[in-house]
Length: 279
Picture 1: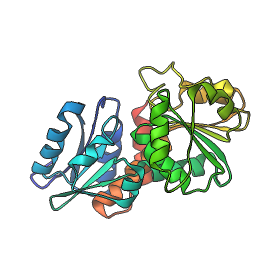
Picture 2: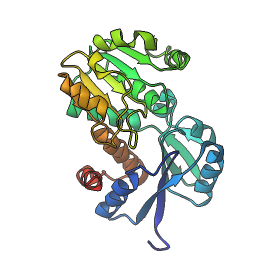
Picture 3: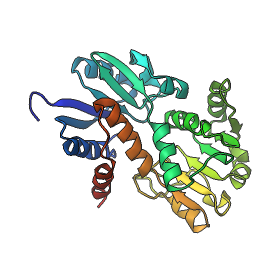
Picture 4: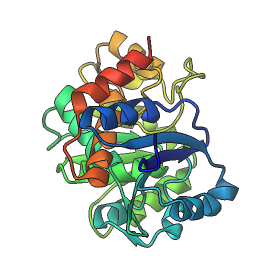
């Protein structure tokens, strides 16, 4: 680092599990960019101060993770249409002092799902677990793929209904009561966990009983630490196809890198860096 180094980072609560610094610092080196990327623990009560600090210190870019993806929007100058439609921001670009919010979660996730597990989502029945910030971007991106049915379940049923209602003018999402979830999962082609249940260090937890899924369905998890969650492992043991969160994590970071730098992201070395960090 020197006085010309451009600063980037990620904020969240918790944040110490994040592999973003490993991945993006490697990407900057590979691309010959004088940039430095760090993780910052920001609690909800200090979010506004953190964004003011990013602005004052002239960070070029920032990633935003749980639980700030929705609340952070009120502190930004502009929201990209895709992020506005999703109702959540996970990437911020500083354009000459103007902070612009983007959502790379949804497009990164769908790219990964299609490349690694289900090449076509058109006509598929999809269940999404969780109604938080990550879920919003993913629902919006999934809806662009013309699924036969998009269902949403959350332990607090009202949150699922609210989120489904927020998208009602653009596409239909069916809220599913947690008590009806077993039946919904049994008829689904893809079941996606967008919650943090099963994330390290609580890696023995599962959001639902994986035996609810029919054989051949895709059990997908946004979590990438551990690389394969208990939900995915147990679903695979029952004859399902597993899909972990590493691909989404890499692609959402790649899209963020491209927004910040205007250069193509070195996806191959980004994946290598993350994989190496687990050994």
